[in-house]
Amino acid sequence: MSRSMPVVWSPETRRHDPRHEVWVGVATPATEVAERVDAILSAVGGRELVEAEPHGVEALRSVHDPALLDFLATAHERWRAGEYAELVGQDRVTPYVFPTPAMTAGMPTRLPAALHGLAGVFGYDTMTLVGPGTWQAAVAAADCALTAVSLVKAGVPAAYALSRPPGHHATPAGYGGSCYLNNAALAAQALRDAGHDRVAVLDLDAHHGNGTQAIFWQRPDVLYGSLHVDPAAGWFPHVVGHPEETGGAAGAGATRNRPLPEGTGDDDWLAEVTDLVDWVDAAGCDALVVSLGVDAAAEDPESPLQVTAGGYADAGRLVGGLRLPSVVVQEGGYHLPSLGGLVAAYLDAHDAAAAVR
Ligand code: SP5
Ligand code: ZN
Image 1 (cartoon, protein in one colour):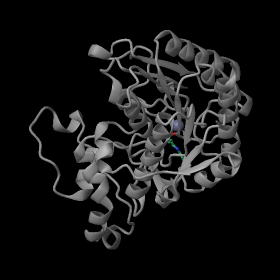
Image 2: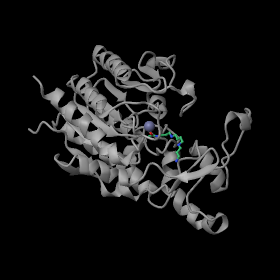
Image 3: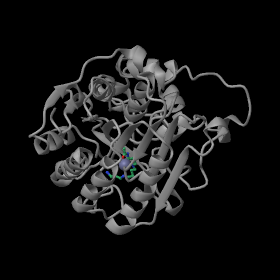
Image 4: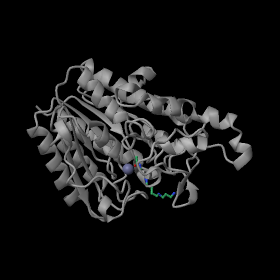
């Protein structure tokens, strides 16, 4: 059997074009672009390519509320039918009101009748727009992760899902942070359903994966560990991702956050990767999902971390050394010239470490 991870991808993932993101009130060019898919594909060329198989919308209910799925599946068509493009001059579904507790103040509320009101019930930021192919691409990204699980179920030691749009900021009932469906959480749940008793999600993206943490917050059977730029220093997702968050109820102790200061480079980043890997090892997990964001790289415009390609290779060596059945899911990473090389550096080292006997 080949010792290098197959790459699961889908041409459908290119259909999402956010075009722009509204950040602190200003529309700026999108960073989570379709060209990311091709940048990664061209760098992992030596590997077996597998096209994602459709798993159906029902499979998405294993981690998401039906209301979110219904909204995402229909929102763009409704926006088009609502003639927003003519009325406001742009065709992407964009929220403008957010019914946070500051607004609702404990009162009974109704779901907004207007789509531009409803968008803020499910979308929790202004950076994550829904366009004509967004739903199809998000479903394809989820199918990449679920197909990677199928390969692992069939005996492949590890598989890489070239999921795009990314997923780790998507919560049970919310989308945000350029994420619509939580691909990594779907993979973790599918590994549980395949009979693995305890699954770890190790999140290497530069940002805290608040969605994945939320989905498994009260569960002891799926661990969530993340290292990321410190939300307490002013970074997205701002309100969670702190070290005191260790899980609720039956999930107490199954969440671990390692926030890092701006400017953190390889040595300090890898010390925390080692800490998380040791934690997963000690917990007796029997399968692994890696949320592989490469936006912690020094070149990346979206985070102030300073990890090198050598750092990502070292992370791959540490994580691959766990020798667990693994599904590696793409998350962030936005510097098109270096993106593919960073992913390849991680995958090559993970494969090499997992192959050592
Ligand atoms: C999956 C992932 O990495 N999501 C990143 C979400 C955090 N985005 C924060 C964006 C902050 C402002 N970016 C300004 C971009 C200017 N075009
Ligand atoms: Zn990120």
